[in-house]
Length: 164
Image (cartoon, rainbow, N blue to C red; front, side):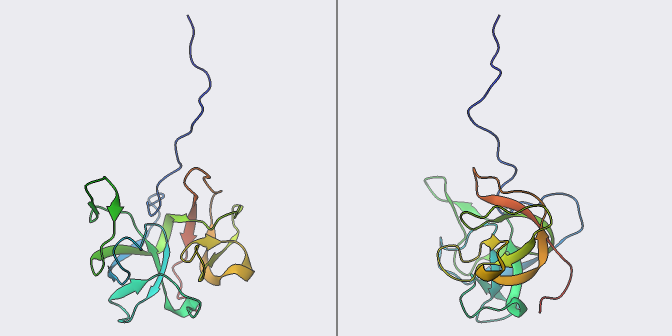
């Protein structure tokens, strides 16, 4: 009798915007300030044109002081006819302010446990995170796990401290 002992695939560690564990966390509701299909789960967002109400992806002008948190993957998202999810413009979405969450990581970034957290504010990776201080703005948090290369996410911890 034979048995399969190796596999050519692996399960991802989680999903972008998913909560990592039962560590205390806070999730607030904001409106999506981006066009439908632009905002994704697991990205860092900043204040939109109405602070406290809407959020947008960071831009080159963004600072840590306007960082709101990371978008969460929750039950308020609709699927389209092809089975893809889209966060619609001006619709409510969750944003984790502090806690542990699976965040999108910029291309070619390989953080180690405890590495500092920086939010990329320009280019195709805007909203993703890196451990390179020259590539973004410092966020009070850290990487708590390696990158899952199949989904380009990593577990991060946002500290319960005001951003400066």
